[in-house]
Amino acid sequence: MRKKTALVAALAAATALTLSACSDGGSGSGSKNSVAEVSAPKDKKPGTVLDQPFEKPDLVLTDTKGKPFDLRERTKGKPTLLFFGYTNCPDVCPMTMSNLAIAEEKLPAADREKLQVVFVTTDPERDTPAAIGKWLPSAGDPSFIGLSGDFKTIQAAARSVGIGIDAPKKEKDGTVTSMHGAQVMAFSPKTDRGYVVYGEDTTPEAYAKDLPKLVRGEAP
Image 1 (cartoon, rainbow, N blue to C red):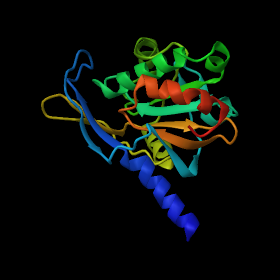
Image 2: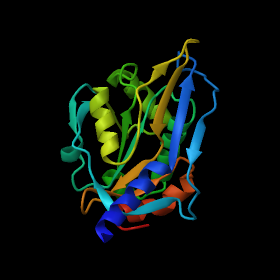
Image 3: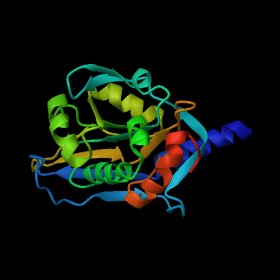
Image 4: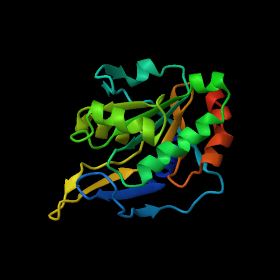
């Protein structure tokens, strides 16, 4: 009974943090539309340590160079931060990538080499590998990994770690609405399991404080 309760708590923590409805003007550039969100009460700590860590998704997609990228194989034994979003997102996604980039810069060079930041698109029809490759360095950092592929495969991978995403929906006025979880999940280099989850309001300073421990596979 205790194990079941822990699993339910982990799922609730991972899925209830934030659900964002992002819309753009159809072109994906210069949009100022706001993000509607439904959030659970904010914890005092920026990251939620899960009682029952998630398995890393068994996911093979295409990277920005057009080559297959096996998430489990390529990030095995490495501290990994995983985020699902899309390049036309007006604010949450670029803000998250920027915050992570700022925090990463504060790490020693050796730790920066170890850390893997993986961006997986929730809008693969528009987010081709080339499009992600053009957007990611300016939104985040050139070292970040960008992945695209089949939507249903991506959706299943997100759900496997408690993050909900819906297929982008084109409205009558031409805008595109995308529902996606705005969490960043940290995977331990020791176990390769996702054990800490961060909400969209996590600041660069908060990430910078936690990253040294995450790189070592410790609880922040």
